[in-house]
Length: 263
Image (tube, rainbow, N blue to C red):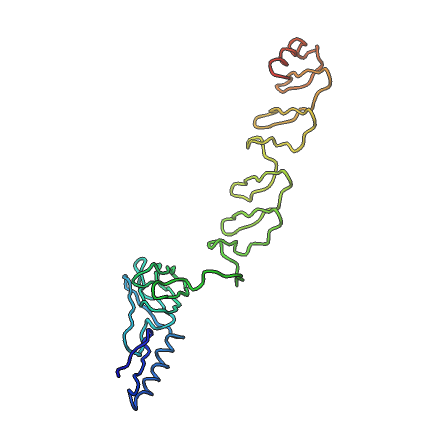
């Protein structure tokens, strides 16, 4: 009876066959075929085109049987690495300058970025990620900014805001209740009172009856409430309170202004 072969091309000796030589076949099965599948590493060389790996009926060394595939050569653009449609695990190290998708002749496969190593599983229909979920994870080093981390920035205090310095992240101090976050342009943002030119008042407190007025260009000031009977008049280009009936607005004008403006 002729030998048959497993999906990994391990030679299966027929009953009663290979008398006197079966030991040699078994040693090749163990020392080459099985060892490649468990711990073997093989280079796969690209030359600006896709690469297809195949398996044939021999227990001699075969690239597609190895556990680790080290991709070398020239990619010349995104490429495919097509592997046999058998159940098998692979560790793929993409040493090329472009993304390589490891897949069967059908299926979407898994894209491995340039310079990265991934573990994938060939389920004989498609190549998929080995791990899609981790219940917990501890990083050996701070996650870099390019991967969504803060690259080891200091631990922020409660209420602090992260901002970019150009090469890293830093944190400002938390503001007080009611303050707004003010841009510093290329400098660090700060918490403070919103200025008059930014839609605020630049004022932090008010007393009952205070009036706001422009005391200078782009500047808001407060005018405290006047005394009973005083009227609002103008001196030096700004509003002031004055005694009623004096140099201020007449009683009649005060009544008219109150009717028009709702004072």
